Image 1 (cartoon, rainbow, N blue to C red):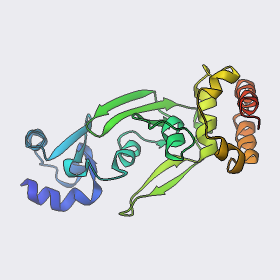
Image 2: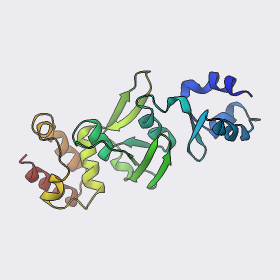
Image 3: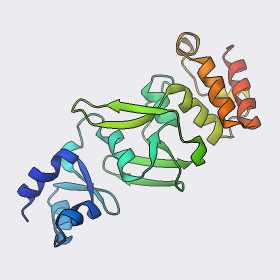
Image 4: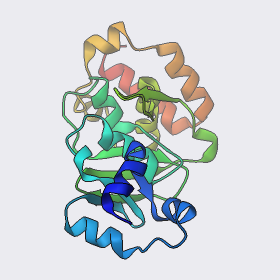
Amino acid sequence: MTYTYFYSQWHRLACFSIEQVKAIYPAFNRSNFHQWQKNGYIISLRKGWYAFADLIHEPDYARYFANKIYSPSYISLHTALSFYGIIPEAVIAITSVTTQRTCSYNNEFGQYTYQTIQPDLYWGFEPKTMLDGKQYMMAVPEKALMDLLYLYPQYRTEDDFRDLRLDEDWLQDELDKSRLEDFATRIGSHAVTSRLRLLYKAYDL
């Protein structure tokens, strides 16, 4: 199989797994992937997953791949908070939440980290649509905050929360406190509720 033919058939998917390719082409020679990597045509995202190299500078694809290479997962935590402009820093690593084990991957599209939550806490996300119509899942702002409170117990004082430098205009004008309180109730953790109260005090909410 030539790369030109493979590209014409698979580029619309953006990324693909060896299993997907084998399901369509049982006789596919995996050594092709290694040669195409050497030629700079495709990039390894993780073991068994690849993406087309011409997408590396296209917007949103680094986030799109986060859902694909480790599922189920949705983007949350610092990446989501940065996406919404709630924290000022540009976040290099793409942080996601998953019901699988905690893990991380590094590739040419970026650094991907996945934090584990219980299956009954896997909610509070929505699709984000890319320019070409593809979608990836990201936490709504309030769930990104709750995931942070749940997964990062090191935030334990008002100063710790001030150090996050949450955007105070967003907190005052756009934060849906009733949704945040509902999420805290659904999580049902005294520790998380206590951290939420500290966040409120830190920003006079």
